[in-house]
Image 1 (cartoon, each protein chain N blue to C red):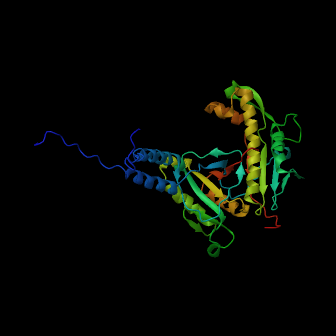
Image 2: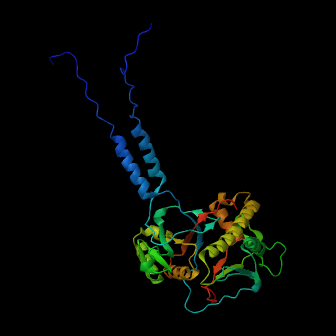
Image 3: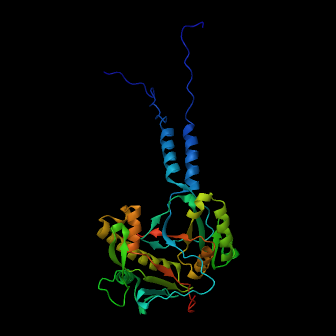
Length: 155
Length: 197
């Protein structure tokens, strides 16, 4: 007869976790390169309309954002559409002009004419407030704008 | 040493690097966003001059697109669905039959094509007017259709004159293409027609 094995003698060797850090680092680098920092936290509702003729925004440092939509905090700001600049909801479109000017001031001089304003507008917003903002932008000489939208799938 | 056997240097315990990397990973997952921004690029006109300078535009060169506060669309006094807008704009601008009611084409010498004279809808304007109560979604849809019409015509133009895709044109060719097919979308100040807001 063959020899009997001792019961519970040899333990199975533990699975080596030596390569785990490598795997995780790979994931880490993927996310570091593929993603960008969030600009701000939205304080207004953001659902974008869909469109087909879209271009990608390149060079994010040249893009300044203006957010328009219903405030998430309805108790404080009411149900009407509001304008958010940076991290704050501001009163009325009058504040857009000074905001754009100060943003432009903070840019490098050679980049200033290349500034682009991205209007992130909730799709249920009425055009009235959008037009007011556009008028302000025109007066502030910020003429390159883009309306943020989502790519429409198969039309 | 007293004993001949050399002692090996103990390995640094690396089991915690995984934890550290995980921590970093989670941090980046939380603070960053994947989305690349897409947008419809438009150019605003410079600020309106104080005194009203009216430029006379022939009626045949104007395509007035109206969007009312109920998001309905009207093109040249005729209500149409959004899906038909692109064709309407293309027909208006390209005007293949030289209809006296659509965009007027004028001969323009294009230097890039060796001074070739091309009939160009030089003075046409697509005028987009909306109400203050129009929803942004409807407005974007209309804008998108108009831009789509132009993009299609530009593609055709690039094929015809340069035998290339529009996106592959060089700087000078682009300049010439823009002369052959100018893109004139004007946005009038919105009117308050009243109605449901």
